[in-house]
Image (cartoon, rainbow, N blue to C red; front, side, top):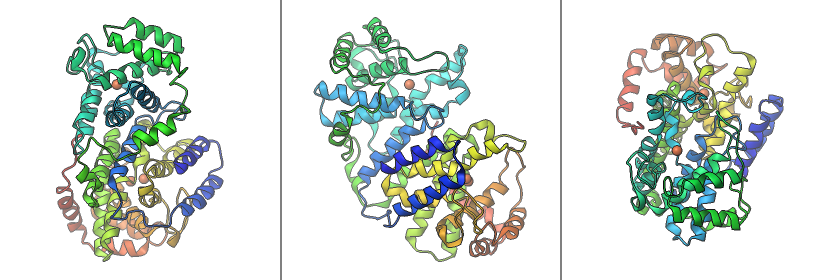
Length: 473
Ligand SMILES: [Fe+2]
Ligand SMILES: [Fe+2]
Ligand SMILES: [Fe+2]
């Protein structure tokens, strides 16, 4: 959490402060934070699951300009825990409600930003695309083992008490009570949050609108209870973080997740870690068509290169995961910049470069993954020290980052991009040979070049077919 707070500071100053200074600071901080091997096989994955779910909850709002103060989902989640506890709901339900509230709009990652931020009235077709975030969100959550009820709560957060909601037209008690609570708090906070088409409104206005919707949108009795709780405690859930939340979080949220298959998540089996990280990578890829497939190919090629170099099994796992997540920070780059055909302005370049530190921030949220996060965040460092974000050189850069850099370069050259067509393996090999010892680590380059260019596509492809990626939509 310390690191997360620190990264937020970095983020806030990123556009204003001299890069050299900021990254020097980051470098010292990051290196101090490393040390122990974080990917211990005995790590209790049940808590990692919670951390990753929390991390996923932040992704949806990561690209907002007012990210620092926005965090609608966090406020709804905190408010929901507060209300659920006061209403005497059991601990398991409270925890599940927290995650459902945090992730209620996760399905919006598959809706285009233009549509989400559109000021004009949506067409019927556009509106049904936006509404579909409930279905997509539930599929994302349900792809993890043992998450059925959490997934269905996400699916039903736009159901109405009178049966006129979506996607399933549930009515009254058909809607589980926790979802009813979530819906009221979602509305309560949304009204007080600025939107593309309107300014934020006052708490009193939110109370008035919700009261008006007693019996139509919301369970009338529950409206009275929730509004009274909010009133009595003087809580404005729009003020974040709520002062008393830390204790509630410790009691209800930061405990092994009970809706899941405990044996699966608490086992020391690396498989459960893969499961969730692959989902995480898929969620990130689905947010942006531009990187779709790229992270999987980079991950596969990096792992192949490590195998060829005879590296230990643990390194193979680390490079695979770091490869999957290396561009996680790209969710923060506007699509117009990623797809721009002309050369970028200096300001746009700064935004592109920042995806590495954002990657660190997104993955490093979880202490268990901080080493992985660092490996991933260094994939644009150069062997000669002229890369970014920290201008590390040679051995200062984790060796696995050197491997990812080679795989990343190979895939970037051979994939069609907005500014260049698809190119052959031979073409990529020539470029990579040229920059060996300057941009890329010569040992890794040598390993790649030892694979005949005619073989490489097939080798990468055969590994990808065994991935069976999660279908997001
Ligand atoms: Fe929603
Ligand atoms: Fe990158
Ligand atoms: Fe990349």
